[in-house]
Image (cartoon, rainbow, N blue to C red; front, top):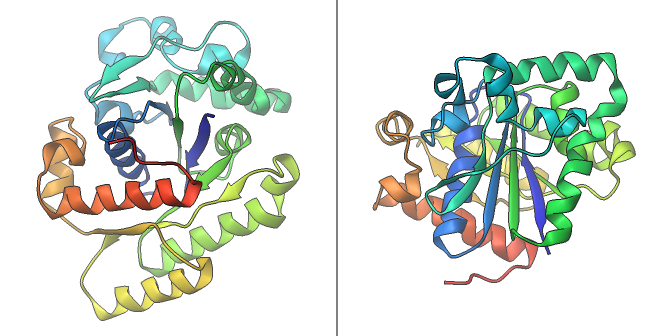
Length: 264
């Protein structure tokens, strides 16, 4: 069975793309078959894995063809995947911004990714599919959340993170997203960018109280994460210290929460 999870927050700068990248890489290292989909036109996730289709292709149409855009619009198939660090990646491009404009003109297209992924789900090619969407409450977020079985919220321990996580949880469980995709469930969140301060610990306790549990804590590491981005290498591959241990612990907690076994 293929489980599709959208990693989401409408707040920017909460380590959303890093969480999607590193959790996917950690699960791939454990032997799981993982597909990672970049549905954010900023393409930070793709670039952080060394795949920059806007540099590879000078023509905008060619760049767009490397993304989920044609499959969502029904004008082409899902793109070929890039094999990186033991997982498969469907990259994004700045041209994916055009998809947002198309979604605004025809709201029925917000189910396009869900339909496109049905074939992958039916084939059982992957154990896990993760979708990284842009920080918005607009149509691109809806596109990704309608395609998913679960939503994972990266939440930094501060007022901004708590507010975003609480609001999205409410929309998934009893609001807008619940009406559109009633089977969608909210996973326990990942605490991201956590500094070692009393205030951060207070917010973490509040987040745990709100959600009942968390998948783990990823500490604020100002040297590790920018370097991983610059080297286009996921943290579980790049690091062998506490940073990797944190991500692997999140992966183990994710598997336990969704009822999947660790394969290695």
